[in-house]
Length: 449
Image (cartoon, rainbow, N blue to C red; front, side):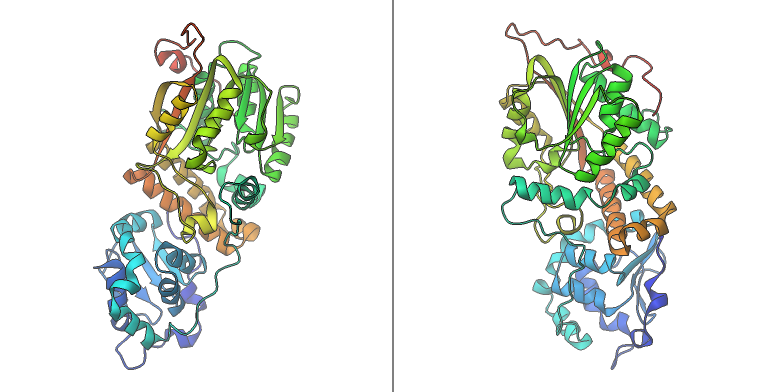
């Protein structure tokens, strides 16, 4: 995606454009630091005084628009410092950000070792006067409390992630208002049609197409799109829960506008508060990343307790080999997704089985998420000025960087997304499941909504 922001170079004070005193220019003076971070730069790097390093051409150009970018990297080595430099405009990328980040992927392990492994970097920092003042963190960084995955901290994390504003999410996600991986069966679908195809696949895997009136719990229901689809096309009776107040307000309005108030109930509720209810099926789409790997067993135990014999659960979640939990000093934790954790899909299967589910199907949609993210990024680019007006330049740039790095991760296989389908067998062992996947792949499916 081409750069959509005005270059900070056009707004730099004249003092920042002067060559470094006592040397031929910033590129020469900062050379040891650049090599520490990037090795041999795979893309051109242009500094605030117009000097450059790296190859003459590439998929894009990195502009170190101000010495403040280097100060961020030195005081917060790793992705957090790089992220701060980018969101504040001290570091800019011109050209295709996706391709530039893909070219830089091998350089990522070097970021956190700038100061500790390269003494020359400290000498450069001293010459440039970068060590005397710690740059402040933008106000948009998250503060969520101490006790990880307590109900209060989970609510704060969800507030930071989702309460950016319904208007901003509508701008990025489009009319489907669905913040999870879409499904592009042919690759030619619009984003809205692909999200409808994903919802339909989930409904059929859960068996909602068997007969009207089945009761569905949609955990982490977002703005209600999954529940609306299930009720509209399969006659399901739906309870959707989320911790986000703005999501609840908009989801309830969408339900009312669709005339489905008798079929879809939206609640502001924690999954740990569910008790004494019975459902035929549970969808958990884009929710499990908020649960935490340490709570996976209790999460699936709660969902199991809500289902009777032959009840089904579909867990749709981002995963990574070996799992990962972003630390407190990562860009993702501070700006986008506090406390978000990714499990290995094998851990998900094991936890579901331990809770009493028979796992019947595992499907990866990894490549589909690349296409989904590129569509969201295109929406953001097309309405960039409006996005900045809604949430400010720091947050808009943070989301642009987050979605692009995520697209690179799904593209190269560092990230994946899996749908894991489980069922509660009857005492006799009967599952009620179709004999093959054709049982949920068959049929034309409903039109896009």
